[in-house]
Length: 372
Ligand SMILES: [Mg+2]
Image (cartoon, rainbow, N blue to C red; front, side, top):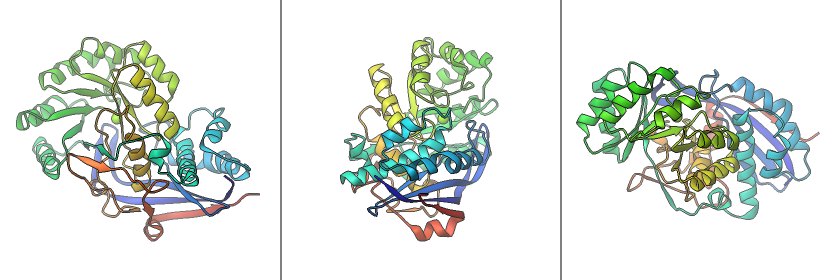
C-alpha cells in the first residue's frame, strides 16, 4: 500500500454521564482520529486512546501528537509499500508510546483488510459473528446510586458488570451490589489504586462477596504484589496496565502474578500484538478478554474485531455506543443484542461507516499531511 494522505483530527466527545475511576472523573473524551488514504482511494481509520493527562499510563494526547507528527506519519507517508507488520517493525526501536503506535497500526490494519476485501475481524483470524460483552461501572456518588446503576444496566441486558473500586470505595459498595444481586457475576477493577500492603484486605472483601475477578489492584510494576494476591485466591487476578507487550506478559506468567489477561488494543500498540498476547494467554491456559478505553465507534470496531477471536473466553468491556455517547462517529452504531452481545461487523475493513459530518461537528482541529 502506498499512502496519499494522512489526516489527524482532534475530537472532543461528551460522555453520556461522567465516568469516575480511581484516577479521576472524565466528563468528555478528547482524542485523535487518524484517517489514512491510499493512492488507490482506500480510506482507513484509527483512534488514539490516550487522554489529556498521563493518568492511565505515561502517554497523553501531547505525547501521541508528538510521536505521530515527528516520527510515525512521515515514515508511513514516505514508505512505498507500508503494511501493519512493516510499520510495527519500523517503529520497534521507539520505546513505549504504544497508544501512538496503535492509532497508526489500527488504521493500517483497516486498510490492509480492505485491500484483501475482508473485515478486520477476518483479517485477524477472528471467526465469531457476535461477541459477549459486559459493562464497566464507574465510581458513583453513593452506594444506593451504584446499586441503581447496576440494576439499570442489567435491565438494559448486560450480563456481567465490572465495578471500579479504590481504597474507601470497595467493601461496602461491593457488598451492597452482591446483596441486591445474589447471582450476578461481579468483577472489580482498581486501576492500580492500592498499596501492596492491601493484599489481605482485598482478598477478604473480594472473597466474602464472591467477586470472580480482581483487576490491577496494584501499580503496573508491582508484579510481586499481584503474585501474592493470586496465590490460592478463589478469584482471578487480571492484569491490565502491567501488560504492555509480550515480554511483560512472559514476566507476569513466570511470576504467577496473572490468572487472567485484559487485552487493550491501545495499551499494547495495536491489534497484531493484541492477537499475539491472546494466543500466549491461551497457551498458558489463562482466560483473556478485550478491555475498553471509552473508544468511539472507530476504536470500538477494531476492538470488537479482536474480541471475536476464539482465545477471548470472557465477555469484553465493549458496551453499546449509547452507554458512552449520545452520538457516535460511526454508522451503524454498536447496539446491545440478545445474550449481552454485540455484532461483529462483516463488511471490509472496520465494517462500519465513519460519519464525516459527525467527525466535523466534534473536531477541535484537523490537519492533513501528504508525502514529500
Ligand atoms: Mg482496567
